[in-house]
Image (cartoon, rainbow, N blue to C red):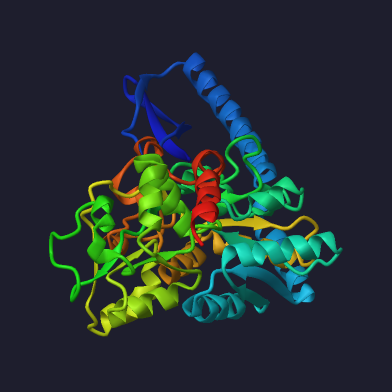
Length: 412
């Protein structure tokens, strides 16, 4: 910023004033006093001319650099999106997201959000089949780690940065850890990862499990828990497969084989597992998202979190990846949706609906601590988080997919 300072030049009883521009950080500097002479005056005016020229060039540069983010450009995208009428997104199966998230977007922009709520693999498989058949229905897909990579492998996804328009979304400084990608092995540009927290710990029925009775996953191998352990489906990309892979790395195949022999109650619908846990049909539930048990906990049913397992929990991005389909049928509406989703309002609504932590610095995530799944940005650094991260294409290929293959082999 340029502030104009009055410099008093004194010569015996004669005083002249010269206005000199001085670059400051916003605070007016004390008056500067120098002896007056003709060379001083000429030098001062030369300084003025050079600084004015520099300020003009800076203004022109800034205007050019920010033209893509100009309000008029964004308005044109919104108007074009309204003419398209809607955006179609494959999202997670949660009623809260279908209601508040959808309604807020539609009221904000006057564009319909057709939110197809289903498990990530289900939406991904549908999108692949439609794409191969020449059908373009989906614009956007949400998923967890490992869900959307098959579409990238089939060249069905668009470069994601092309849809990050607004400066507050595109600027990596707005994000803890900068821009992070699910496709982090070679491409780093198709599947954006906007969440970073920790895997949900197990839940247990406190009428069936006594305090201190389960302190390690090894304790689940005791005969008394046979037929009493529920788990989200590990044979497909999911939170269940994430935990299965984590246990494969931490404890090996022999442990997983013994766990499978405990007659696990495996389901792809977390609601069914939560109901069985609340009724006491199950003693423990593994890889179950917080949103499934919340209603029962709030209703006073005996469900508690098992936060003390010695193996700890891996870093997670939850259901926090997003990608844009190649040749999206509603391209402008897709841009509006992506920039709203990754803005402050969208990230707050999405995170609260799914109980997961946004990486945006301006989104409050401290409330997650009470669910024992704190946002990574609230408790650690990106470098430290990298040591426990258990998602991303590298982890999928090295651990999650092999774990899923082993699960399909031993689980009947």
